[in-house]
Amino acid sequence: MTISALWIWMGIAGLALVGELLSGTFYLLIVAVGMVTAGIIAGFNLELGWQLLGCVAGIGACTFILRKFGILRKDKQPVQSNANVNLDIGQHVQVTQWNELRQTTVTYRGAVWQAQLQAGFPPQTGLHAIAEIRGSMLILQPLPCNP
Image (cartoon, rainbow, N blue to C red):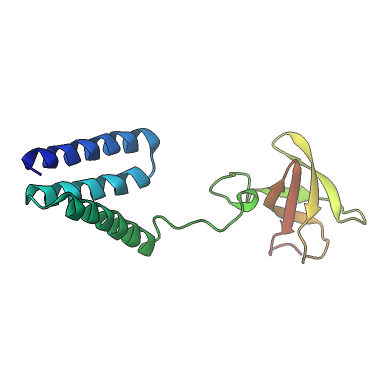
């Protein structure tokens, strides 16, 4: 391959960067790094096989580094209880009574909600935190400062 292979790889890397800007993920950025690696190898006039190997090695190295530093980690927390996804998680509501099924109704954000006590906690009145939202049911846990 000639020096034009370098520009082909860099052009593909540029397209991946544009796609990255439009998508907002790290994945196309990783692909772009792999393409740049292959372009550098093409600049040394090495064969296509070496360029492809360099592309794969660049993608693999970036993936390893980003996973090692936790940037590409998979969040194991379910969406229903993830405060980064649902801003209601952690907010406080006042509970005045529980029924025999460990359920109640609470007022939150100007509306009446059905609520259930999270498993493992004894029923008590007072301030509770929203631990999870399942459909239209708030799952509550008592705050440690409750009497």
